[in-house]
Length: 424
RNA sequence: GGAGAAGUACCCAAGUGGCUGAAGGGGCUGGCUUGGAAAGCUAGUAGAUCUGUAAAAGGGUGCAGGGGUUCGAAUCCCCUCUUCUCCGCCA
Image 1: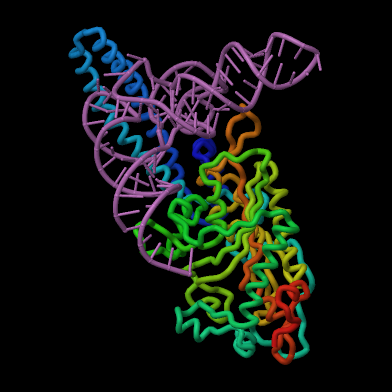
Image 2 (image 1 turned 90 degrees about the vertical axis):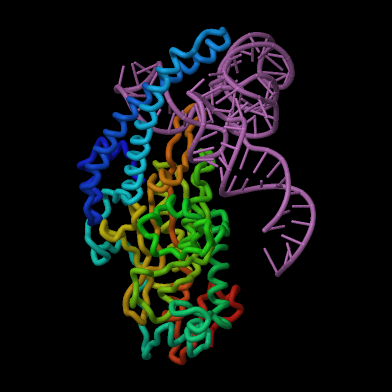
């Protein structure tokens, strides 16, 4: 959520900055106008309430003293009806403003490239060169079916499209990666491990910014409690501290969370339908930080380095791009995407996304901290990043480590977890 | 799923309609005392949020959350959530 005061005082600037994302934000002028009306009504109703409170207290006093209260009762009746109607208009204005703000995305960081879509993202670093082969290569879907470690047909029978069964060493590869990533980030990078609920409520979805705009992306449960399947561990893990005041000495708080993630992929009909690149259910290890405002960008860069380390240790070629304004996620101010080399597509594909929301989610989720005993409360900054998407890491390993005979060499760091050197 | 109990500030806890934005402890912060500390004595402790302002002052809201009754609600009524206990079922 953006700060209403900021919008009130810098309307033109806010609209200009938001417009770099694309879209029309002229409605913010209406919001400001509504806010003026709201405050006007608020002043009036508050002074009426003050007077009414004063008179009400007199009634108690009069009664104790045995005086007649009839004369002041008439006065109170008049206050009450005016207060009621004014209160209603204030509440209506509040709700209207809140609704607009919930649909308004975060301001893009001013230093990120301005652009309309992912073609204008800017590469900032590169690790290794794309893998080359001296034999005809296969996609992970072909490799997986031949090795009998990925089964798409039976997953279709059990559930439907965009689901997969991992089998044998395929299942073990997925499981090893989860274990190894959790170990790496918790033991070496100092994150605290979290396994949160995989079902979240509506309030949690609003707090991180999935709702209201991306409701159609979520799997809703048939249940009258407004429950949804977790779309990313970011949701439960940020909400871990919703409505809390964090100890300043504990910041930055660093979590590594493992969950399965569930997405409708509503806007992706027909895209990436082969293989496990885009599934309704996938595993992800996610990094989350709560930081002091002045530290968030330094922590963002450290988080990026922690994510990159996964691919470096796996010896997989990747590059990092800064998302341009048009490709930036709704709640985020700045995002790095890590894209891994996929030989079958002959290009880099997203495998992780590392973002700083600054105070946008903290404001929605009401997560604060206090610098000193008597200091005012301030919003923390929240960061989240992949560490990494597990299924896509499986793809990258299968494709980049494939041999001419269709077998797959297991990256060295995973061998202690896998118990084998090669999948054949 | 059934039956019951509870939710008050940083923590514990009193409080059945006005004199309570909230007794009493604990903790924390300051002062006295001390060479220093402990103990003791003493003062402060809604610090939230909205509004307002240059900053204040002032005002509204705030006793799990939401509605209602009333001139007036922590207190009465309704709904929801959470926690705990017992029973049932169960990985």
